[in-house]
Amino acid sequence: MQNGKKVALITGIGGQDGSYLAELLLDKGYLVRGIIRRASYPNTKRIDHLLAKYPNDHEEENSFILAYADLTDSQSLRKVIERFKPDEVYNLGAQSHVGISFDSPQSTININLMGTLNILEAVRQSGLPIRFYQASSSEMFGASPPPQNESTKFLPQSPYGIAKVGAFHLTRLYRDAYKIFASNGILFNHESPRRGLNFVTKKITQEIVKLVLGEKKEIVLGNLDAKRDWGFSKEYVEAMWKILQHNIPDDFVIATEETHTVRDFIKECFDLLGADYTKFIKTSGRYLRPAEVPALLGDSTKAKNILKWEPKVKFKELAKMMLEHDLNERGISLEEASIKIKNIENQKHGI
Ligand code: NAP
Ligand code: F7E
Image 1 (cartoon, protein in one colour):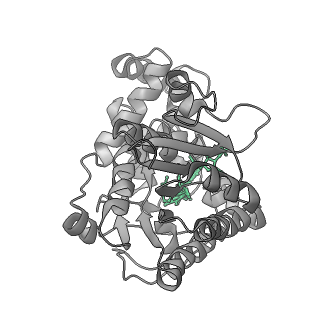
Image 2 (cartoon, rainbow, N blue to C red):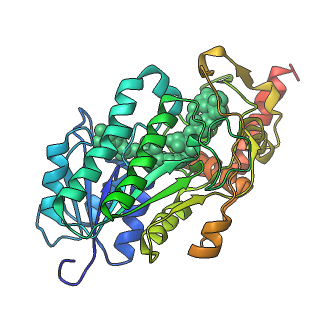
C-alpha cells in the first residue's frame, strides 16, 4: 500500500491484456506499475493514452509508472519488486504466439517458463505479502478433448503450451510450498481491437479491410477447422482481478463456453458485409503448425459460482466489434464496406 492505495505491478503491460488491466486497475484507484522491455522502436502503442494522461516522470507517488525490466533478467525483476513493493503482481508478459513458439522454442521457454520462475523468486525473496497472478492458458489442455475445466488433463501441443504448463505448476508449487498467494487464471482465447496483428481473428479483420480498400485480393490462412472459445479481453482482465481478490489462492478456467471454427469467424465477418467468404479465402501450408490444438471449449462453472464472473460478449458481438473497429480506423463504415466488397465480388465474376 502507498498513501492508502493498493499497488499493482503488471508484466506485459504493453500487451493486449496488460493495457486493459492497467485501465481497470487505475479506475479502481490502484497505483499501477508496469515493466516494459527495451525495443528499438516504441512498444507502448496500446498504453500511450495512459502515458499521456499520467506523465511518466518517475515520481514514486504517480498513479502510473513504467520501468524497464525483462522477465529473462532476474535482477531487473528483483529491483522493480524492491522499488514498487506491490500488493499484487500480474504476470502477463510472454512470447504469446503459439505458431512462433515452434520457430523460437528456446526463447519461448526462457520467457514463459523461466521468466515465471524469475518473477516468482523475486516475489518470494522480497518477503512481502504479494498476491501473484499467473497468465495460464487453455493451450495447456492441447489435445485433451472438450469441454475443458480445472480437472482436465494437460496435453500441450506446442513449446508455448509446454512452457505454460511448467509455469502453471511453478505457481501452484510456490503456493503450496512457500504459502505465497499465487493463483492461475486458465484463460481461453480472448481478443479485442487491440489484439496482436498475427493472431487469427485480428489477421482476418485487418485483411478484410485491405480487401475492401482494394489493397489485397485474397486472404491466406492456415487451418480453418480449428475450434476456439473466443471471448473479449476487456472482460477477461476483470476475471484476473477477481481471482486475486478471492479469499484463497486458487486456479480458475475463464471462458465463454461457446466454441467456433476459424471458418465460422471468417464467415461471420463476411456475413456482416453480405459477401461470400469462399471468393476471398485461400489456405497455405505456410500457416499450418507442426502440431495443432484441434478444439477448445471452456467450462467456467467454477469462476461463475465462486467469483461471480460471467462474460457478456460472445462470438458474434466480438467479430462485429473487431471488424467494425478496423474498418472505422480506416474511415469506412460497415455499410460502405459492404457496398465496396460486393462491387469487388461482382467484378471477380465479370458482372
Ligand atoms: P500480448 O499482447 O502478446 O502481450 C504480451 C506482452 O508481454 C507484451 O507487452 C510483450 O512486450 C511482453 N513481453 C514479451 N516478452 C517479454 C519479456 N521477456 N519480458 C517482459 N515482457 C515481455 O499477449 P496478451 O494477449 O496480452 O496475453 C497476455 C498473457 O496472457 C500472456 O502471458 C499470454 O501468453 C497469456 N494468454 C493469452 C491468451 C489470449 O488469448 N490473449 C489466452 C491465454 C493466456 P513487447 O510488446 O515488448 O513484445
Ligand atoms: O490461432 C488457426 C491456428 O494464433 C487460432 C494465444 O493468445 O490463444 C492464442 O493462441 C487458430 C489456430 O491463437 C491462421 O492454427 C489458421 O488453430 O489466433 P491464434 P492460438 O494459437 O489459439 C491461446 C489460448 C493463448 O494462450 C495464446 O497466447 O487459428 N489459424 N490460420 C491461424 N492462426 C494464425 N495465427 N494465423 C493464421 O493465418
